[in-house]
Image 1 (cartoon, rainbow, N blue to C red):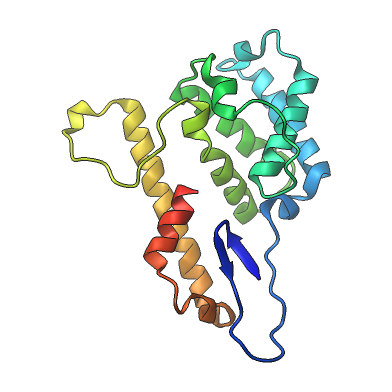
Image 2 (image 1 turned 30 degrees about the vertical axis):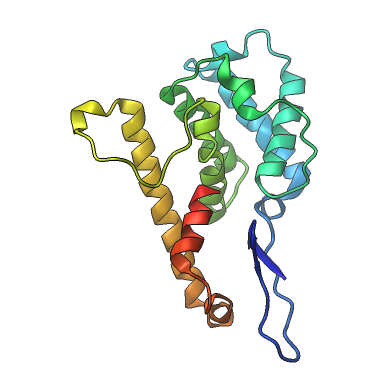
Length: 205
């Protein structure tokens, strides 16, 4: 069984001598717990040094925070789920974070990945995974793939940014599946799959 995404278990066609195909999780490809420890250390140091967001860490138990961050990111990246803290939306709701604060966190995360020496493609995947947490961290409604038509002047800055993020995710998912389908060894797994529906589920996830 190949688990590309939750809810999609792709089985090889019936026949003999099908080689086992596996796809390592992002957690594994980043290096597991040891690598996440280093990433979180760098990420936290950058956040504490950033004047845009450092005030949010006043009075926070930083060692405890780093443990929670590592466990939560392990879960998000497809690794072991040992996170026992608050729901991420509830944990951040009282902070009333704005779009610019989330962008600062995301910049720190990108810089941490660069400092730790990850290749560009893996770095982009790890950034996208954290970027997908934006609605929960900012306590926003989930980003919808379809929005009612409205006048540009009625759309505030946050909604514009959310729309751009949605378009970006569509591009990432479409590009990913375009690359997957280029591999002849994988094409057979998608013969009876509605790609439109699959892409929609992946974007929502």
